Every structure is written in C-alpha cells, then in structure tokens.
Image (cartoon, rainbow, N blue to C red):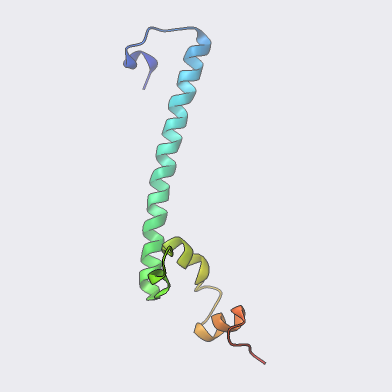
Length: 90
C-alpha cells in the first residue's frame, strides 16, 4: 500500500523509502505467518498419522512431538528406545 493511501502527504525521499521498506517487511511477515500456519497443519497431520500419545503430556504439541518422534530415523519403538538408552541393545 503506498504511503498516500494512509492520508499522509508525501515527505522527503528518505521518508518515502522508509515507508516503502516498512510495507515490504509487512508483506514478508504476512507470508511467513502463512507458511508457519501451513507447517503447523503438516506437523499436526504427521502426529495424528503416527498415533502417538506424547502430545498428551503437558506442553507437548505437534512441533515437540515431531522433534521427539522422528519416523524417518527410527523403524519402530524398540529402535527409538534403544537410541535413547531406555532399552539398551547389546
């Protein structure tokens, strides 16, 4: 949105440049927020497909669950437990 749409009179060229940069930054932030929302949807779907109960713990949401339970690295629960030292493998 150009600065004159805000009802302000044109200022110095520096004022115009600052305002233009501010609007660009706002556009970037809006896109980042949209991407964050899409990422959250994908993580929610991944956690739901996993069927894990880790999200029942206080403060654990999809982001933490995805970090803790990495399906690509571990073939099953035994491999995950062995990796964490819960069930050491000889």
